[in-house]
Amino acid sequence: QVQLVQSGAEVKKPGASVKVSCKASGYTFTSYGISWVRQAPGQGLEWMGWISAYNGNTNYAQKLQGRVTMTTDTSTSTAYMELRSLRSDDTAVYYCARDRRKYYDILTGSTSFDYWGQGTLVTVSS
Amino acid sequence: DIVMTQSPDSLAVSLGERATINCKSSQSVLYSSNNKNYLAWYQQKPGQPPKLLIYWASTRESGVPDRFSGSGSGTDFTLTISSLQAEDVAVYYCQQYYSTHSATFGGGTKVEIK
Image 1 (cartoon, chains in turn blue, orange):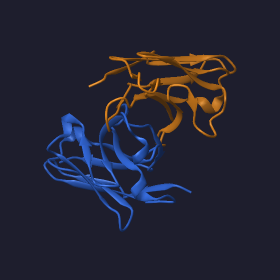
Image 2: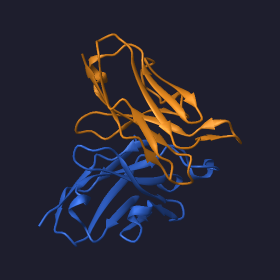
Image 3: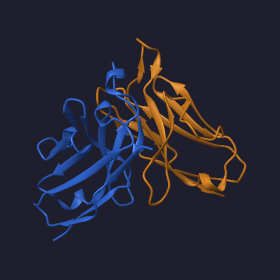
């Protein structure tokens, strides 16, 4: 069965960086893209960006450009999200989510997300 | 960026009654080339990740009860729970995926039991 298992909770100081991992299993990793979505306490969902596990192409939300980097390691079927220059308003639960459609089926637009990781709480506090 | 606006922010419905949630996009999410609306609905319960309910605006994900249905086209969409059950208490989000390798979510609608 498809699973996305994320790394554990992190506490960081303002200005630091955090790197969250998302280990996939139960499917061919390189056939699907991965998005990262975050949720501040008591707030809604915010899409952060997307990475193709096939060729490493990325697309980041404009507000995070320059502070976020998404990568994959196909040898371990793991996706990573690194966020730098952390601020208090980056405190949130961070989720990875799998594209519902395979990369070669997405000819226009994007896709919904059918499997999600359990979430990783990142707390930014001095 | 396409902005998604949900209404209401919250609603309370009696068990067995209908719940209706609306979602409006700032531009059409209908691709004329394939006549598909790039709109999904998710359910999120406390402490859990979101769960995909509906995609292509009206296609139920496998395993989703048929009391959940999606409708609408272009810029205006609706999620309907035909007969609310206790386990449906959650926050519901719409999402557009019209933009290339990008997405935005609505602000969410909290559904409670009256």
